[in-house]
Length: 248
Ligand code: GLN
Image (tube, rainbow, N blue to C red; front, side, top):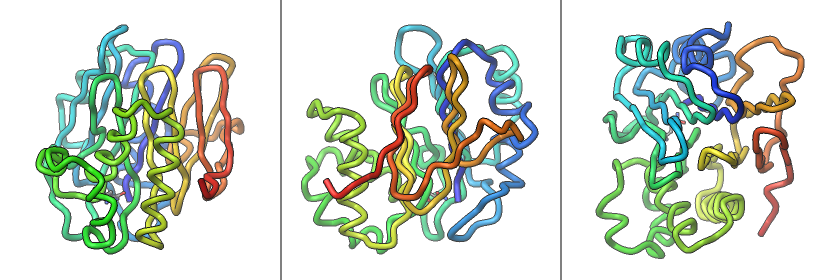
């Protein structure tokens, strides 16, 4: 069910990051090694967000398998960046397959992705959605659980909450309202990445000056470390912190 990754470090091409590794995100779209909770391929869309400089990210997303889009393959060879969030999507049954339903979701410098499902959606999270301004609900990117999850996190970010707390608080609240949900989310502003692990796999590879946070390792490098379930990762290019999601 969906695969995502974030990279922070020295500039690399999108091709080096997304296409060339032996178990790259592109390969994971048709041959993931670790799919849990249903789904066999991630062919319902993809998205890539990257930071071309000090400004806001550029985003490209489509409701088609990443391997069928010649544009991203071409862009990837000529685009270098030091921060990326990318995802391939396997739509949860019943949810829309649209460009706007593919991660990353974005606002300002923020890019966001969700790997998983909110159980009982939408009824289970109506009480949480009630905390959002009506405008936010009317302008969701798409009628999906992931778009609502982004609106909940974004609401906290707009209020000035620390990004790690915004993710942890939202994940805890949704998990309490909708038990059994799978809530692996990934959030970055191009400098820091925050990732939750709840119900799906996540691995981290930290080098001396670069970090990768990904649903599954994209190569056989022994430096990949699996993050335990119910944990929160906060990463910059040179530092990774892993802690329990906690109870708030
Ligand atoms: N539930 C989300 C969607 O349908 C994410 C799906 C997934 O992680 N496979 O878009």
